Length: 448
Image (cartoon, rainbow, N blue to C red; front, side, top):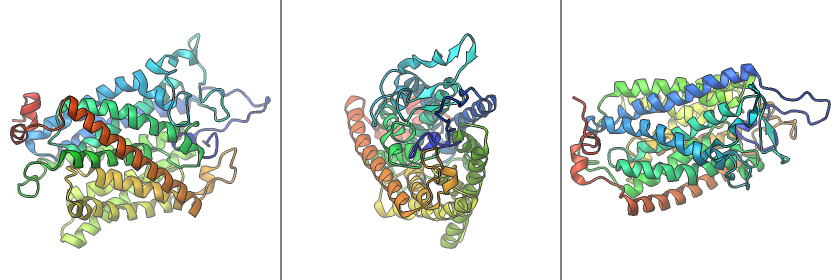
């Protein structure tokens, strides 16, 4: 599937271009595309519950396991409502190049594509030169995008794990989803967005999901400060078996994340699936080898983190690169993320509890930049740009600008939102609650 216009990135870089002449047949719902997107939506939801929940829960201490699982599960519930009420509209309705309007608030127009029980296509950006017609029902597209909106604030939780109030988690995530996530999604994935218009390539969320979540996580870690006992007490993971199960679910679910972003059952989806598998495997191996060489022992947590880093890095590139490019992205990312999660964190002295920035932020930046290096022209061809966008210095600079803008916007707004939340409900639990554990202190429950 090809993009509707040059620079329409992510999902829209994978959508079919329909001829505008009168002789062209009217677009219709494609049952194969619809079936694949239903499956992809379920796969991406599985990434948060149970995937991310178990992955993070396996890396905290026993006294905080339930609280960590609660964060992922509760955010799934909360962000579902936020997306329905306003998030989807701000991201995908007509508006300015910087944010959508409220015409789709409360999913007010969702039934417009259903006529006498028969699905008909819907158009994003209707009435504009960038209008893009979909071959799946809008309800499925909305749900697919909702799963992305759910997992992004849940990823941030890895940076503030074991020390943030649950009330603060809820309030911050609501505000962040509306003020940070939805506008960036509009910039990149709406055909009307300004980053899409300048040619940014982000197939499935390198900027929108991973850089956004990683940078927000870093700001959270800096504002909240280190966990009690960081550097002096044993903060070792409680149960890496949980983490292995969680990472495995993330890997499988990521095929919905990336291959699903083709928005169709087609060759681009197949290529995105292949590049996703290759990059994840390569990054897992390169992290393992780097750690083995440096410490003398390859760890379970290390290879898990490397594979997740590879999945992160291939996300913006999945539908734009060939298998060789995916291999290179994975090998590079595994080593760079290992440095980001170990040397960089220790050098800078911040406590990114579960390496949200070290894996998602660093991996997202590397992947977004390398997309500009390895993009293969025919995979990114559009009606407006039949030759496609190949890796080049120009595309690398475009990618770098998108990365820089996302970092600045997310960093500044996350800091402001944290300060607001701190004034309203407070950010950090008491010393006593942290020592007792968040399971008991915040939720009145414990693992026996």
